[in-house]
Image (cartoon, rainbow, N blue to C red):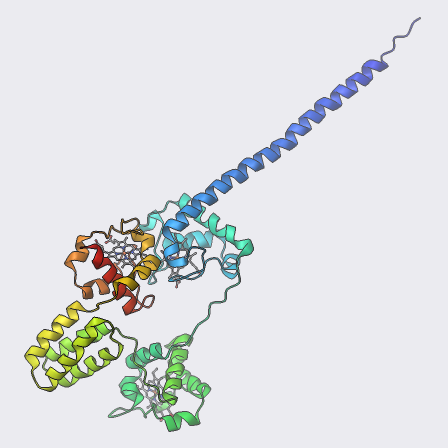
Length: 379
Ligand code: HEC
Ligand code: HEC
Ligand code: HEC
C-alpha cells in the first residue's frame, strides 16, 4: 500500500498560516502607528490654532513668547507645572476679577469658545518642556506705602507722619527713625499697641502692604520726600473742587503737589495759575485751572506709538482697525472725549467688557502718550 506523503502540504499550510498571522499582526501594529501619527497631526493642528488665538488675544499683556508684560509670564515652568489643564481653562474662561485679566469664555461674555480655550491651553503646554523657572518678585514701594499711609495712618499720625493736632506720635522724625530698624517698625505696625490706641494692622493690611509701609519709613529715615501714588489728574480735580469752594490754601497744596509729578507741555500752565491764586485772582484762576484739568494729560505722540503697540494693539489692532476691542482709527468716542475723560477710561476700564483697567499697569504719562497717538489718528 502506498502511503501518501502529506508532509509538503503540512509545511505549506504552516507557512501560509504564519504569513497570514504575520500580515495581520503587521497591519495591527502599523495601524497603531498610523493612528498615533494622525492623532499627533491633529494635535499639532490644534496647537497651531491655539498659537494663532494666543497671538491675536494674549500677546498684548503676556508677551509674544509668554515672557509677560502687563500680565504675568505664562512661559514659566513653575506656573505650568502647578496649574492643571482644568485650572488654566477656568482661569482663561472666567478671567481674574478686579485685574486686567479679561474673561475670555463666551459664557462669561468673552469671545472664545470652549474649544478655542482648550487649544490655547494646548499651545501653552507646548512651552512647558523648555519653560524657564520664574519666581515672581515683590518689590516694596515707598510711593505705594505713602498712599496706604494717607488712607489709614495720617488720621492719627498727621500728613506725611509729621504729627500735629492728632492722637498719634510723630513718625517722620529722622532722629528716632535712625535708632530703630526696619524690623522694629514691621513688628510695631503689624502688632500695634491696642491698649494705647495704636491698632493691630497685621489683621487689616496684607504682608505686602506692611512691607510698602516699611519702605516708606525707610525713605523717611533717609530724609527723602515721598508722595502718595495719586495721579496729576486726581490732584487737579481736587484743586478745582477746593478753588470752587474758595479754599485757596488747599487748592495751592494740590497744585504744588501735582506740579511735582506733572510732565509734558501742560506743565508750563501750572505756575501762572499758582501766581493767580497767590494774588487772589480766584475767578481767573478757576477758569484756567478748570481748562487745564480738562486738557490734562498732554503726552507725546511719538512715545505713544510704543505704548499702543505693547498694551492696546492686541485688542484694537496694530493700525487701530479693531478686533476684540473697537476700531479706534477713526473713532467718534475719542473725538467727543477730553483727554481727562480718555485717561479715566484707560485707568478704570469699562466694567463688564474686555476693556480693562490699566491703573497700576501703565503710568499716567504712558497713557497720556497713548492718547496723543490715538488723537493723531482722528485728524
Ligand atoms: C489686558 C491684559 C491681559 C490680556 C489681554 C490677557 N491677560 Fe491673562 N492675565 C492678565 C493679568 C493682569 C493676569 C494676572 C491676574 C492676577 O493678578 O491674578 C493674568 C493672568 C493670567 C493667567 C494666570 C497666570 C497665573 O500666574 O496664575 C493665565 C493662565 C492667563 N492670564 C492666560 C491668558 C490668556 C490665554 C490670554 C489670551 C486668551 C490672556 N491671558 C490675555 C492680563 C491679561
Ligand atoms: C487710631 C489712631 C491710630 C492710627 C489709625 C494709627 N496709629 Fe500708629 N500709633 C497710634 C498711637 C496712639 C501710638 C502711640 C502708642 C504708644 O503710646 O505706645 C502709635 C504708635 C505708632 C508707632 C510707634 C511709634 C514710635 O515711635 O514708638 C508706629 C511705627 C505707628 N504707630 C505706625 C502706624 C502706621 C504705619 C499706621 C497706619 C497703618 C498707624 N500707625 C495708624 C495711633 C494710631
Ligand atoms: C483686552 C482687550 C483690550 C485691550 C488690551 C485694550 N482695550 Fe480698549 N477696548 C476694548 C473693548 C472690548 C472695548 C469696547 C468696550 C465696550 O464694549 O464698550 C474697548 C474700548 C476702548 C475705547 C472706547 C472706544 C469706544 O468707541 O467706545 C478706547 C478709547 C480704548 N478702548 C482705548 C484703549 C487703549 C488706549 C488701550 C491700551 C492702553 C486699550 N484700549 C486696550 C478692549 C481692549
